[in-house]
Length: 192
Length: 192
Image (tube, rainbow over all chains, first blue to last red; front, side, top):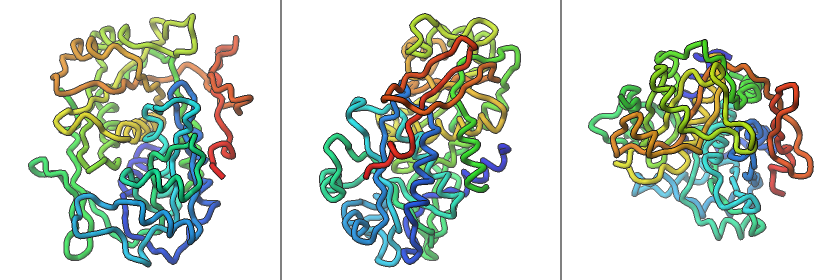
């Protein structure tokens, strides 16, 4: 694969919070996404992360109210029925291998995100959730602590990248429903 | 891009610790890699990570002795002269935006790794380094704390993936110089 194809994939893989809930995402697709995490590097090569697949309507209904959506949108409690995620992956740390996974979490989440994009899926990485209730709802062994939830589905939201102005990095929505994400310039990212 | 092309890229993008030091990696390539991090998601969209590019022989000589290599190889102090990295990216956190970047670090490191692979480069994400000395050597403003060092170059080492046996996740080298990395099976990664 050439650099430009990869760059294009990364530009297209946007965080999305509104989905076509009527289009299911099956266990087969979720397993394909988890398989990609096998090829990520891992601190000490311990590979302590595991995934709980959530795709049944019953489990989705339990998971959804435990999540917080889009911190900057004070007047938005998350997607309406019909636009909710069609599936979730819950990334869990197996405490057998320590209480810390260094950057394994992000390495794997990026692999999953890019995989989603190749399958026509989009999603949202969520850190704000009720972890004890989530563990209970999914009957996770206490050895596994949920670290991130990835909400997944077919997108019904348009997201565009903007240049940041005056360090105002908050994402915003315009009345046409388009979600805008200001990104820093390459120049700003490089330390001289 | 289709799923299989992405999967292949991820399988090929291996951690490598021995390089052809005579083949330079220029600032242009390093900038291309940093550009990819613009398209990663970011907690609160704050985008607090920055990169210091290191490619001159003088700076590489300062950086190399501050790094620890391959913790499992007690009798190996890292690559010999001639097989050392041709460049580094030093990922730094801008403390203006807080002391924590959630999983932004890993998300961006995975983007960089995959980018490297498309350019024929390989590398190693290093967490064990002398951070105060590194900051001093690169004259980083105290606002920027180094979080990870990515060693980069054209590989002269062969790396192969193995299936894990008996939870023995330590990587190892065989007398033929091949580096073997045991990876967990998909079944083991999925919580039932």
